[in-house]
Every structure is written in structure tokens, then in C-alpha cells.
Amino acid sequence: MRTTPPLPPRINLREVGPRDGLQIERPIPTAEKLRLLDLLVRSGLKRIEATAFVSPRAVPAMADAREVAEALRQWPDVQWSALVASEGGAHRALEAGVRTIEYVVSAADGHSRANVKRTTAESLAGVGRIADLVHDAGGTCEVIVATAWDCPFDGPTPDDRVLNIAREAVSQGADALCLGDTIGTATPLRVVQLIGAVQEIAPRVPVGLHMHNTRGAGLACILAAMQIGVVDIDASIGGLGGCPFAPGASGNVPTEELVHLCEEMGVATGCDLDALVEAAGFAQQAVGRPLPSGVLKAGGRPGALSRVPGR
Amino acid sequence: MRTTPPLPPRINLREVGPRDGLQIERPIPTAEKLRLLDLLVRSGLKRIEATAFVSPRAVPAMADAREVAEALRQWPDVQWSALVASEGGAHRALEAGVRTIEYVVSAADGHSRANVKRTTAESLAGVGRIADLVHDAGGTCEVIVATAWDCPFDGPTPDDRVLNIAREAVSQGADALCLGDTIGTATPLRVVQLIGAVQEIAPRVPVGLHMHNTRGAGLACILAAMQIGVVDIDASIGGLGGCPFAPGASGNVPTEELVHLCEEMGVATGCDLDALVEAAGFAQQAVGRPLPSGVLKAGGRPGALSRVPGR
Image 1 (cartoon, helix red, strand yellow):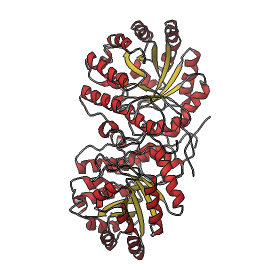
Image 2 (tube, one colour):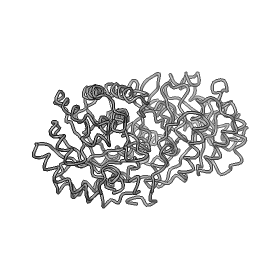
Image 3 (cartoon, one colour):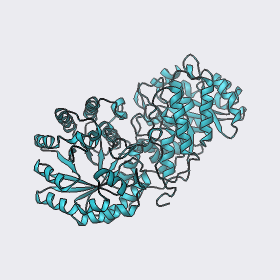
């Protein structure tokens, strides 16, 4: 009987809803954000992107980054991260106690200019200084490659631009990479092909995946990536999100849909599905609009057995 | 570099929106259904489930089955099918000119009773007479196994129940089989394991897949199935649908999401994506509520190249 490739025994899920999800929403009160973080922690998540240290004018929903970051020490077992777009942002994040810093480099100049008013090359040139700053504080620095497959302004992103960023970022000190499908256009073969090429160029750092679900293909892409051994995977509670500077983008793969998919296949996530559904329900209430997650609407598999066929 | 298994060069897509999609909606005028069928034909679809010959009291939206079926001869290049639940239904479908007949057998007694007021064994016993009737008219008879993975009433469906239906149905004359994930709970490993086992039991008939997208895993399941060579795949325009007798069920995988996924991977579908998006927009208007398809909202990949990496 033909079968599919084996999957990793577990994934290293990162929840990005509180940052990537909430950044496009009208600002919600900090107390509600902290309540959401508490629900996420209770669901078993161990890596959570909590906030972004960026311009409060450009992203008003992240204006309370410092307050959020300082509250994180109440959950010491979680690896909290914050996104930054500049050296100043990295400085503020470190000062507020965050030790896992994500720095975005858009692979396409069009998105890069819209997002941070700089070209790809200009953003890339900043990696070294930020990595040094983070390392001096005892932290780790991840470079997120936005528009790794397609750009809403420039169209398809040539692979070489992504591979060049990966090579440069690692040589400047990046401790991890993550490929972002900013407008949700990637499909499984393109994902496997590009992430495989990046892994070859950067064999010593984890290479993660950040899939927007704009065309419904997010979980299929993640399945294919897991088949080649990718375990660092982003998801967003309830499917919250989008990108304010990428027209047509929708939210990430919903965390609870990814956890349902993985756990049903015997791929451990460390998360409790019912607790995630509760957190997604809270997130939906907080943003005041229906979120796209199927598992939020339907729940897990009724009468599910813990036994997975063939394992 | 690790890679994923090769995919089939093409799939044998079946559009089920006009039946499985519309059956739960308030009845829409026959003229609108025919306009939808016309748009679907123009998009390049070659297999379309047009209607169901079932009780008009139980499914008022299919009360115009005869009128719809008789209009199909204007599109002779399409393989039109109709679903039936009884010998009488098969008789009426044949009389109206349909030659591809689908007969449903629910693998779980709970769903079977709710759906057709019979047990699985009672439905299964009807296959032979219906297949004979269809063959005498020069047609083909497919048995669709509903609740192949889980039942909303009985919980997980034991594999043996599905394998027994497959064995019996083929021995009674079924020309094809299709496994239905009625409440959208299946995940890739379960799909591959069960469809592989059915293919072993019934190596001489096509075994298709009918995935509801209730928990967002439909495309991931289809990707895994294509990796083991499955090519007979159902989808529903716009993601129309659900099941009136299966609480919590939502629509099938949206046709345009499946076509986007496949075409971007070099798997031919014979369909034009823009034409499908137009048809999905019309379906959305006809039912008067937003449909869940991401590709309907966002369109295809902007600036897509026809070249697929690695092919």
C-alpha cells in the first residue's frame, strides 16, 4: 500500500495572534490582551509572539508594547518574543525584558518600502547591529523573511532574493530564520522547494514557516513542510490577523486548526484543544468580529479516540 | 534535499455544489440553478453532480430534479451525475436521462437512520438492484460511503464497516466508490490509511474522496491522498454546502481553492480559475450569504507565473 512520508513526532508551535493577529485591529485594552495571553499560556503554548516594538503611529494596536512586555514575567515558562523593525525597536524590547527578538526583512522591495520605508538591502544591512545588541543582552535574534513567495506589489519573489537574505542574515548573526507567506499565495511544492533551499544554505539555524491562510492552503503547505522535517511553525489563535501593508492578506493558519490536524496525526503540539478553542472564542469577542477558524465554530472531533491509526 | 512524493499529473475533479451544496439552502429558482450549471461548464468542469432524486419533502431544494436533469442535454460534453437514496430515485434519474448514478450508503447506523431511515446493512442490500437498473440503462453506478471516518451520532466509524461496504458494493456491481468525510473530521493520515485499505479491497474500481472542510483540513487531506495516487476528488463551488442530517457539517472544500492548489503545483484540473471565481460569486449571490472560500474573496495568486518550480 502506498503511503505518505513520516511526520516529525512533535512541532515547535509559535502563537503569533497577539502580535500578527491584533496589529490590524482597532487597539484593544491592554488588560484584554493580558487575559488573552493568560488563556494562551493555559492552553499549553510555550512560544508566543507577544507584541511588536514599532511605531505607535503606524501600528496603534501595538502602542502598549512596553506594558505588555513587562507583564510577561508572570509566565516565566514561556518563550516570549517581540517583533521589531529597527535597532531602536530592538533596544526598547530588550529594555522591557524580552529576550527573543524577531526582525523583519521583506524579500520584495515593494512590500519592504510599504512596510518599513526601506529597501530589502537597507533592512538586511541592519541585521548585524540588531543581532549584536540582542546577543549582548543574552537574547536570540530571528530574521523573518516577509513576502518570501509573492509580494502584493512586485509579484512573485525570485528565490535568489530569499536565499541571499538567508545567507546574509546568518553571516550577520541571526540565530533563526522564518519564511513568511505574507499574502497567502504559497502552495505545498513552492513551500517545500524554497524552505528546502534555505535549509541547505543555513543548515545550522532553525528555519520556520509563517503561513497566511488567504487561499485556504495553509495547512496543506504545513503538512508538506512537516514531511520534509520542518517543525518551527507559526499559527494565530482563531485565525486572527492579516498585514496592514499587504492588500488582500488575511490571518495566519488558525492555531486550533493546526493543533487539531497535528494531534490527530500523532504529531505532538503540547496544547489542549478545548483550551485553545476557549482562547479563540475570547479573541473573537475581543476583536468583535467572527474569526475564520473552523475548529472555533465546530470544536474538535466528536468522540475522538486518542489512538491514531498506524501509530 | 528532502522532498515530498510526486503528485498525479492531473485530477478528475467532480463539482458537487449544485447538489451537495444547494441541498441545505432554501430552494433557489431552477433558472438560477441552470445559470450556475452554465457557469460551471464554462469554467471547464467535466464532471458535475447536478441534482438528487430524493424525497422533495425531506430535501425541498432538490424538488426540481427532473427539470434540472432534462436541461442537462444542452451540455453533452459533461459527465452529469445525480444522487439517489433508493431504487425509485434511481428509476426517476434514469428516466430523466441521467446516466451516472450515485447511491449513498452511510457507514454508521446513526447517520444512516437520520439520513434515509434505514440501517447501513439495509442500504447496502439495495446496491445490487440499483446497479442492475443503472447498468440495464447503459449507465454507471457509484456508491458513496458517507460518515466513512466519523459519525455525528455514533462517533468514530470502525474501518471494518467501510471495508465491508466497499467489498459488498463492488461484488453487487458498483462501478466506483467514494469516501465521504461527512462532518469534516478526517485528517491526512486517517485519509491515506482508509482510502489505501479500500483501494486494496477494490483494486479495479476508482475510489474517490469527498472532503467537507469543517475543520479547515480538507486541502491537507486531499494533498496527502494525491500523494498516494488518488485522483477522483469532489469539491464544491464557493465551498457551498453541508448536510441537513449531520449536525456541525459545513461545506465541501471550495472548488476554486482546490483548483488554485492543484494548478500551482502543476496538477492539471482542466479548469479556468477566473471563471470558477465568477461561478462562485454567482453561487454566493444565489444563496444570499457569504461563502467560505478564500479564493472567492482574494482571487488567484497575483502576478502568478505559469512556471511551477521543479517541473
